[in-house]
Image 1: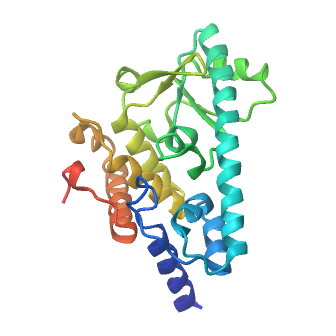
Image 2: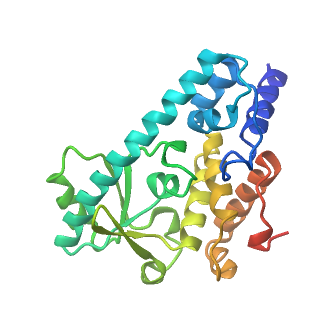
Length: 253
């Protein structure tokens, strides 16, 4: 049983190697029913459709993967509209919330259908948390996971996290995102805390680390609780070992 599980894991890892990269930079792989099942189980069905290419050994499985991609693309637009509603309501109440994970990661993929969005992950400072929760009671039709404080970043100074955050307009509304160092650390630490349950999360790590912006502060990325830093670096190592993520731009051994 252990050997079978290992073989399936290796096959999934091989199929997803480079799947987050721009078109033409990942290899096509044959997809059958078993691999299709693994991709759905690990949240990577749409990425599976992308790497299936023209090498179709099981057309029905590939069609299922394509349906997942189409659903994700439609959901991404709905997510943007709902996020804009939430952020507008927060702003009107004086809450400067930050969004992260989920859609904040999905939007960085080469096309919007490649990653499912899930709930809106919203982070408010501890002092704003009660007010943020009150705002959300007026939006019962929007699924929001409200984090009271900065969760896996609570070993860092809230004011510094906010200072390093950035804003962009989404559906005409100003939306605040974590800075690149904080967001990469958040994704890595979250992945460790949940035991790397989904292969998709390693793709989520590989994607930003291969596209780091100029001036990325590695020293700040590794600052904080030493166990969390070790965990974050371990996740990066897994992404490199299993999926071929390129860590050279991070400057780590």
